[in-house]
Every structure is written in structure tokens, then in C-alpha cells.
Amino acid sequence: MIHEIAYALVPFFFSMSTGYLAGKLTRGAMPLSSINTMLVDYALPFALFLYTAKMQRSSLDSHLALILVLVAVMLVPYFASLALSRFLFKAAPPNAAVRAVTIGMPNFAAVGLPLLHSVYGEASDLTLALAITTASVVMSPAGLILLERAKTRDSDGPHSNLLAKALITTFVKPIVIAPLLGVLVSLAGWQLPGLMVQSLNIIGSTTAGLALFSTGLILASQPFRLDKEVWVGVALSNVIQPLMAFFLAVVFALPKPISGQAILLSAIPCGSFGILFGLSYGVQDTPSGTTLVVSSVLSIVTLTGTIFLLGYL
Image 1: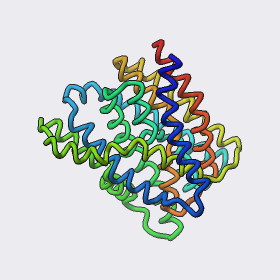
Image 2: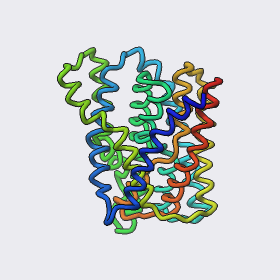
Image 3: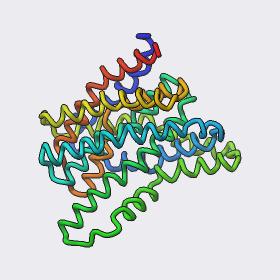
């Protein structure tokens, strides 16, 4: 078991640490925005399209309950964080939105791909694609609506159509369009040409390493200040989410492989999309950055424990 855990976790923590060291040691700022654009708009969408396009329709049917589990696992901590930030810790609405998305949306894109491949192999490709798509479709509007609302309020602009704006912003993103197109290809029964698969895979295969490296860069750039809210956020992300996934997997009677994948995905530490959303609206939130760092470091323990326990379920 120790051998399997080491092979699952050491490679991606090594890649993440490489990005962190690059961010700390490089003179001048690393081109984080360019790396993130390459990842989110090209490499990851190509990979997600290939994953979903080659799936069987029966596989999609068996994963419908998984989508419901992931939605609940993300939204409950999101709303809990949002309420605590606003009413207990007295954060401004845009800061609370950034913190809630950071906590509610695990780092599926960066950590999920190498982690699930190490533990479950290519059989986890569809689970991962659905997780990233679900997170993008659900959590992106959840954060963008609040950020847009704060922006229009500060500028005394109209508050109408915030949901429509957030949904349009979400559904034009390549990271959402690509897997949805892949699902359509699969449902239509089309076979992708081998030349097309090979061409897309050249860039798509860079996703895991690029995502982990960029996560390390983001961690290196975050301000750090520990407080009670950070620990609450880490508890919601690293402890409550996998426990919720375990409970819901039992309630929905998910098949064993899908159940294990859902629990492991939910144990993944905080993601950086909330912080990136905030920066695009001029919001730099120190508690979110600290939560991201602490969640990622402590995931060495929580992911190890989760993989160990899954071996006995």
C-alpha cells in the first residue's frame, strides 16, 4: 500500500514543488497568465474533448449520480464559506465570493488528472472530465455572479441579467465547450479520425505537468497570513468535502470504482480558480491565498489517508 501511495502522490507533489521553486527563485515575475491561458484554453480542453469523445453511452448513464454527488460536495462548502465569511468574519461580498469558490471548487484540473491516473488508470478519464466540466458549469457562475454584482454596485450600474452574463461567460469558455462537444460526439456514435486524435493529444498530454507547475507558481505568488478563517476553510475543503462524498456515495449506492474516484476527487485540495476570478475583477484576497497554500500542503496528509482508506473499502 505504501508503494502505491508513493507512486500516486510523490510525482505530482514533485511537479508542484518545481513550479513553486520556479516562482520563488526566478528573477522577475513568471508569465503565469500565459501559462494559465495555455492550460485552461488549450491543453486541458483538448484532453477533456478526447476523454469524453471516446466514452460509451452506457458509461455516461452510470456517471449521472456522480454528477449529483459532485454538485452537492462543491455547493455545500461554497455556501457555508460564503455565509461564514459575510456574517462571522465580516468580509466584503467580492472577497467572500473569492474565498467561497476557492474552498468549494477543488483543484480537479491540476491534481485530479495525475492523481486519478495513478490510482485508477485511464478508466478514470470520464470521471475526471465530468468533474472538471461540472465544476466549471456550477462554480464559475456561482463566483462570477457575486463578483459582477459587486462591480455593478460599485459603479452604480444596472443589476439585471447577472445570471445570464455569468452563464454566457461560463459557456463560452473552451474548458466547458470542449467536453460538451466530446459528449455529443460520443452520443452520436462518431469515431474520431486517428490523425485528429494524435494531433490533439500532443498538446492535451501536456496537461498534467503544466497544471501542476502552474499550481506551484500560483502558490509561490500568494500572500500568507494564518487566521481562524483560513483553518475553517481548510477544514471545509480537506475534511468535510471527502466525508460528504463518502456519505453521498453510500446514499446513491455508487458503484465501487466510481465511488472511490468521487471520494478521492473530493479530497483534492483547494483550487486556484477563485483567486484567478478575483484577480480579473481587481480583488486580491489574502485569506484565499493562505487557504490555498495550507490546503495544498496539508493534502499530503489528507490524500495519503484517503488513498489508504480507499484500499480497504
